[in-house]
Length: 538
Image 1: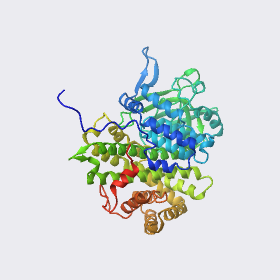
Image 2: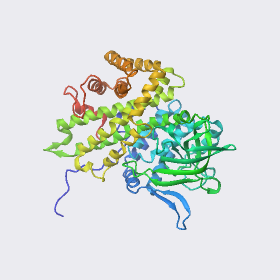
Image 3: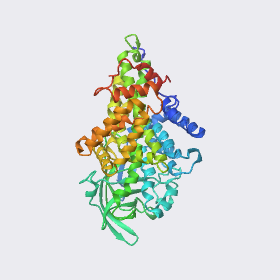
Image 4: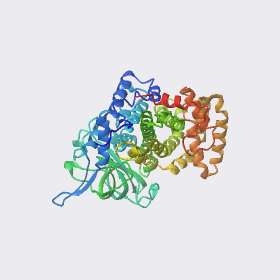
């Protein structure tokens, strides 16, 4: 041995992702004691060395497609590493796929918020396996359009048992659902789908293809196909009675940049048995109920990814010495970390604010307006800022952050997927304009809330937003500017009473100059206090 290893930060394990997150703890102030205890246990699991290793293995030992068995029979089977199954088992056990549909008194009135907190913590560990978890939970919103289907499938979907066995849905202890919307020729423009649905008694036979179908080992899929009445939504089991396949032929798995633990496939099908969900010709409207929930998860997940990445960077800089003192004590580094911390706090608070609006929409018109107008806004912003922030966290760590030994490289590859999935930036911005065109009064409700939350300092901001709304009404090209300004203005920290953190966010994001990198925090803001408040020493 020629040298002794010194001045290296230890892995960020053995602590709690919950207890070391004061903002999340504050956001959960009104949760029951039982829920807060569960969150503490989950936070410890996320930071355990064992769980971190499961996340690493699930992404390094990627899924593999077996189209045929050794005798040449078609099997269309995707094999996963045991680490993936372990992650799925844990997340289903804690109800990430089902809790918003359960009647748990401990979560009454706050089911979306409680689930969002759990999802946020789990995303800090590993996001690939959360794709089927998200789709399974959200699928029930679409199935509600057909009450009989909901009654048949919901009890088997909402069990907290993970069952990866290759059996017909009726024979399994628990189910997961996927979705197939896009096709080669259309992508986001699903109305150009060419897959056909032909009625056969009370069922349909589907023939066509899907260009991206995630989680191909799901027990059933919600798919869009053209029926005689127009584009409609269908529930398509993967296996039928006695394990007979339903004609789904997986062509290949996508070789994705990130999200590598989760399989995404190209699939062709001929005569696949299906049941219609919702009204004939109303496929987009039906599946949008599912998409709305998945968009919330996209925002929450990317907020969690950012939190995990920045926590790694802060941890490293506290233990790494440069020029005779800890790296975090170097003033330029401190300002970079503090500037990043403001964006993570803003995205986290705003994502949880959106979850709250989902909980309260049924009984509060203002919250219903927020949910309708702001889902695309929140999804856009939380997902759009994540890749740049995770990169900056990686740079703070240096070369050690750029290699696969730690989690930052995985977080960096993962960050773009939620911006692309369920609507890219342009799609989200255009959705905002669509809502504005159909129901402009919703944004008046939102602006009133922003004005109340920001207080006297928010008068100018509300005026700017109102002007931006007017411009966007006639200029589609301004949609992104409007969407980002709405997100930043509604970022929730002021309403929470976050003090100097809210002040710094408002002054640098709403009143500051245009910024393209981190580290521009003005000296009048106490950068070290911001970092130490949001990322206390572990």
